Image (cartoon, rainbow, N blue to C red):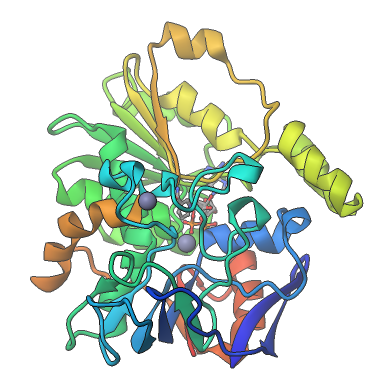
Length: 393
Ligand SMILES: NC(=O)c1ccc[n+]([C@@H]2O[C@H](COP(=O)([O-])OP(=O)(O)OC[C@H]3O[C@@H](n4cnc5c(N)ncnc54)[C@H](O)[C@@H]3O)[C@@H](O)[C@H]2O)c1
Ligand SMILES: [Zn+2]
Ligand SMILES: [Zn+2]
């Protein structure tokens, strides 16, 4: 089959690789029809190289049609239409039973001290082959894939793999009080969708980014937008001015590691990318090479007693945080990988009864698998109005 594979920093290719096969009796093989490129994939593309192996198959936002099922699969049959969550979660352990699928005890990557395995997310997360490919092996066929109805286009359902549950969890964890205000830092797919969900639930949403078309799209949806390029120095003051001098009830950080505005960390990133992998891996884990700009902003912006919800992915161990400010402001902080399966029943009604979140028009680009290398480059450079790209194997 054809698959998008990682070969090095900013080097992804479309290779011909062996078809996946049924390994465990509850596996299913899915023929992929749509597969998203995610902001998280950009971390692999740019800074997480030390944790990748040449030839790793990329992608964790796939959907498609069941092609083959293992002998113990009772809940699916060939021909069923399914979306595959990015967590590899069993659905039956203690953690899954508590809605914490990203901590699944059956798939935790214990030798790395990490939570549940993820499709294509580095050795830290189990090095599981990903879904930017023609076919994907999916374990836990009775509990993991999300069965979706025929009819609406793939666009309607594909974001159940990641964007929708991640944004849903970001908003839930933000604990916005009734009629309250949330500031969303970053208006990529996750931030944009978070504003839509927050407003759908009745909140006031203020969005911050520095890419004109991302700001424009959010503004068109009713978000009050702020261009970071114009308010780099006075952002927190400006936002306090918009929120009774107090700051918003909640802040969602949908930026993560590659935040604009942290030059020291940028240098560290570049240095680790020059080190041999084994040393760089240690450096990434132990020494803080994160770009915490967005998190520092969030701590500054949120009102006293408010909540910060982190959905942007961070890595590293040694990043100093302003503990005095966090303690004194009585900030509540919630974070983590999305527990995809946890939120599906909450989100599904919004996909079956019309399209109140506007998912049908969410993708800005749909391209064949062959064009993945260009699509990655375009998405990373934020060129050509690229906000969300779907590959069509
Ligand atoms: N928690 C999860 O389960 C989960 C799931 C998916 C994605 N993520 C993470 O969420 C983050 C966002 O994902 P995405 O797909 O929307 O990525 P993206 O890279 O498309 O979006 C990030 C946006 O942040 C903007 N930005 C950069 N620096 C900023 C700053 N200082 N202030 C405000 N905006 C800034 C960028 O211009 C960009 O539009 C990434 O870190 C990704 O890894 C987490
Ligand atoms: Zn993703
Ligand atoms: Zn589990």
